[in-house]
Amino acid sequence: MRVGELSRRSGVSVPSIKYYLREGMLPAGERTGPNQADYGEDHVRRLRLVRALLDVGGLSVAAAKEVLAAVDGDVPLYEALGAAQDAVVTVPGGVSDEAAAEARAKVDGLVARRGWRVTEANPGRRAAADVLATYARLGWPQFGEAIDDYAAAMEQLAAREVESVLSGTDGGGRERAVEGAVTGTVLGGSLLLALRVMAQADASARLLGADPSDKFTTDS
Image (cartoon, rainbow, N blue to C red; front, side, top):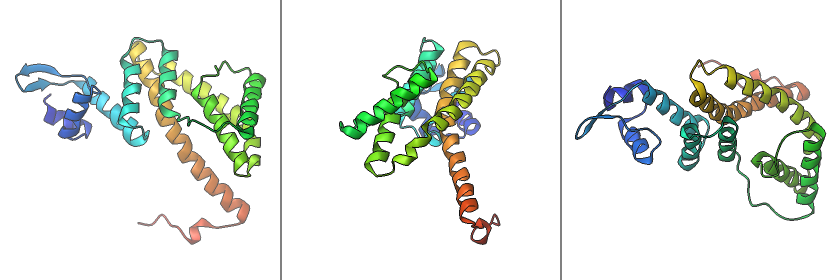
């Protein structure tokens, strides 16, 4: 197919397609002339993945390029998943104070209790400590008291996600598995946030005896 049809099939504008080609986020098509190229179904799927990472996953172009490099690179699935995590989890420089030290100790204790095979360089481990420290600095340490409950829920979810990746490659082999790993990591985080927002709204309504239908309706 030509670039115009690729645009129609993928829902991505021609200027954006050309930009992704220049940035190396989309493989070049097969040259059929000086200024013409043919594209296939792999290009349609890649464009949908690119847009998912940018629009739904909320990644920057630079972060999306790192994730796509993991998809295309010759690395083990475990390392590709790590690359996706590095792109998704933002770890600030942090503050070295008593709250930070206590938070790191709490995360270390969690990892030890649950027997997690997580290195100290794992971005999630560092981000969790930063969140706990921030809770303490803001005077809301109780928010961090549920960390074991969070961890238990995440264990079940993570196992289900990894199993889904390994069993849902549809015969696509390693490349399809890597794509599933990075897609699940990026988009799964967005899904978790969306579900949490809904669950919090429901919990607030139940605990406060509110009826959201009094203010909001589904009528268009």
